[in-house]
Length: 266
Image (cartoon, rainbow, N blue to C red; front, side, top):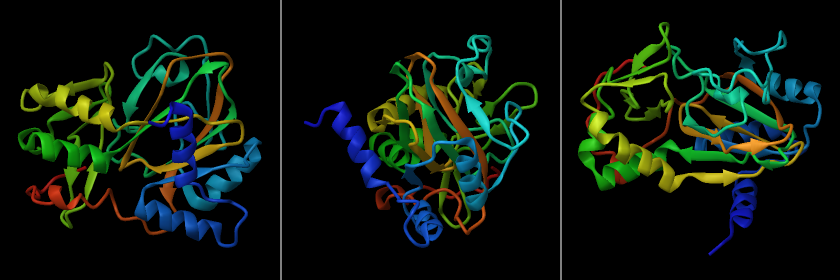
């Protein structure tokens, strides 16, 4: 069995795209359409991160972001105990969709490590396609319930009513989730939340980012998080929508494609 460090290195290598190869942007776009995840290396300054993000996406402003659209993710020392602000502390951050409480979460997330933590702070990733397939296989009723419209409410007063899995008219599926105090659930899905969390935990992978390394993922397919850490961990984040064609969500695994396709709103 591979140890955690080896598994992290393999995950990084399996999804890695060299930014210096010809037509790197086209390679990245193709990989995002196929797997929804790209790992990267070689960005060590804010300008390099901003330049790369601007080529791939129309950057979406964030309430915690700077005027250039980038957000510094670090322990501010003052946000850790505020609901919805866990990302700006140093505690555990559960797997989630970025901006889940908005009507349409941004499609892309770019996170680049400027300085790793002294200890901890590993990235956690879970492919929504695998989570969905595992639920269909293990408990079809859970998968069906989590597709029902407006069975979850994510965010505070200005949040958004949605569902964990949105089945689109073409059969593709998007995932949307948060697991903190700003998630409220319909009685329809509450009995199935332990199964959902188990499916996520079973399939999650760890990724240890060194300085200059990062990842770009489809926020409608992948869930992301991080472990507790110590030290001055600093990352730059960009959110946005792609400058290239990117079908929404994922094509379900063949064994999961038998689910009904309700008419839903994201």
